[in-house]
Amino acid sequence: MNIGIIEPYSNGFLEVLPEGESSDYWQIAAIHINGQAFCPTPQLYRSEKVALAKAARIYDWIAEHEVEINDGACYCSQLKLILWQQSKVS
Figure 1 (cartoon, rainbow, N blue to C red):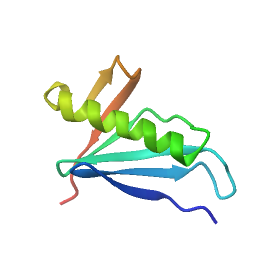
Figure 2: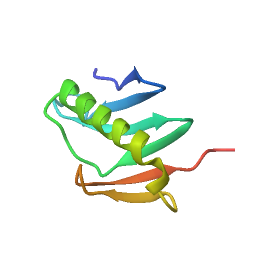
Figure 3: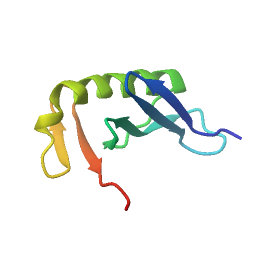
């Protein structure tokens, strides 16, 4: 059974999940930075390694552009995806 991967990165962590139980494809569940979770446009990647590399690029972009994320969402033209900021659960 494939389970998701949570990998520490910089001051946060990256979270990727397999598409399904016996799938070779992975997706980015969330990028966690500064106590916030960001979810990118759903996309499948051919391996865990590729998904984690893309998640790291997204993390780096968020770290540089966090002030541009308004109202919980933004379009990242450099990476060609939309990011949603998940609200914290009380």
